[in-house]
View 1 (cartoon, rainbow, N blue to C red):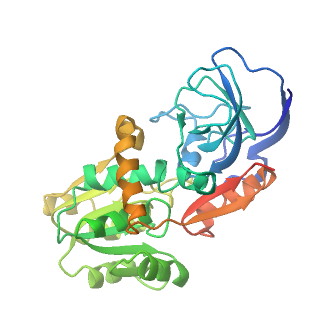
View 2: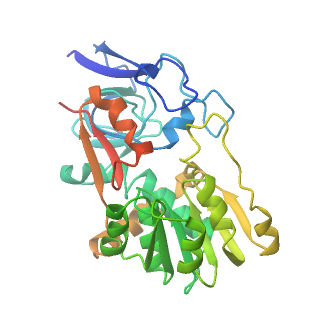
Amino acid sequence: MTYSNKRVLLSKRPDALPPADTWAHDVQQITDCPEGHFIVEQHFISLDPAMRGWMRNVRSYIPPVGIDEVMRAGSVGKIVASNHPSFPVGKTVVGTGGVQQYAVTDGKGWHLNPLPDAMMPKALGVLGMPGFTAYFGLLEIGKPQEGDTVLVSGGSGAVGSVVGQIAKLKGCRVVGIAGGAKKCAYMKETLGFDEVIDYKAGPVFKAIRAACPDGVNVYFDNVGGDILDNALANLAPKARVVICGAISQYNQTKPAGPSNYLSLLVNRATMEGFVVFDFAKRYGEAAQQMGAWMQEGKLHSQEDVYQGIENFHETFLRLFSGEKLGKLILQVKD
């Protein structure tokens, strides 16, 4: 059988916010499933801030996407052809299939997904890489203790929303930062954060100081820039700062570093970056625990799904415009 595969290929490496011609669209005809491989019909593609970093030709934790290669992205779909004994036809799988309708793979980095079809998008969100990022970043790097004040930027996003909820489950007081009344209401009313800060509404430093009068014990940073600087200026003694991302800086030609870093010295605090792939062998642990929390009604997730591979660029830009709520996903199955 022949599969007509719409693909999105990286055409150039942008310096700032990627324009539409950063990518090219083509159609590939897949006519063969090699021995030891299988073909996935992809249903949903994960859109994540990390994709912006993967476009840069710089040293990082993972090689950059090559020019004229399929744009890297996480994905979930069903196996439609297989010459691989561990991946039979009809099974749902999760992996890094890229921005395309079909993926031909030898199975490395892929795993079977037991979720029912209706919950497929959650394999790219709370029960996938963003959820695992929140779980391990907070618990292993942030090390929250009961009674701690946990501040999380990007608190309404795919990672930050889970960070805040796990912190609440661990007995912490949670303050979330996001932009706009809708996102702040979501954090407070749906996610159960104790306090919220709308960074668009006024000076962030004063808002953090008011919401965290005894200082911040754990700061989980997803945005970098000025908000990181303001958080550093409000640390409590022995605070832990978790560097997960810096979405405010990804499209800057000259990214800015923090100027308040001496607060780490004064408060005997630590600041540590991490990459979720370092915890790959423990993904099952995170999935089991968060799945249990979801079944108990203790963990909420929100997926923001848009349609059509031809709308990849427009949807991708929502990561940086803030025009999304929760996990951003592109549905690519016609």
